[in-house]
Length: 145
Image (cartoon, rainbow, N blue to C red; front, side, top):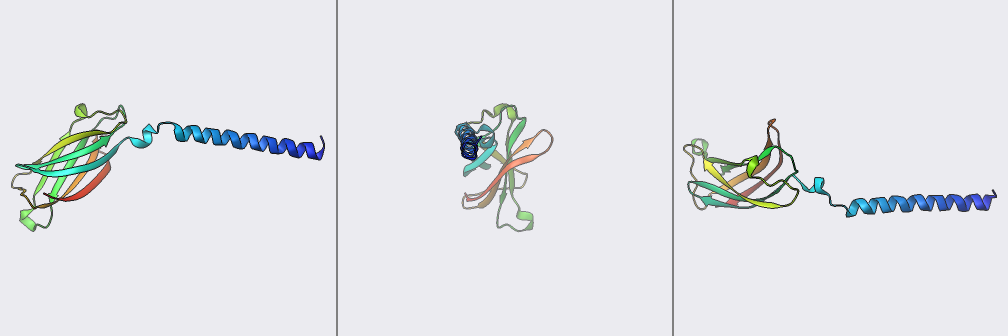
């Protein structure tokens, strides 16, 4: 093989390899990225829902995951004994885990002695909690009721 033919062959081989890589990358980019989308949480709204609160949440989760959706709220700008907290869950059986986005309402019940009123500022934390005690996909917001 002459030097010119070897160079042409090398360029052709390199071009073919580059085209294959680009096609593979394009196929991956076009494929639905289910794993990257799942297990996400977004807090849409927090409202007063006597005697506690209610949170509207958009979620997505992996198929076969054994977890529940948990929400915890704390009233801000309180002093010592005036702390007010509330919590709520959506059990695994009530979650639709198919990688798609779904909306849920979580009713948060106040702890004994806690109270919430219109105009209160609250910090809401929403997360997944699995059967082994791990929490993940934690998201928070501060809202005025």
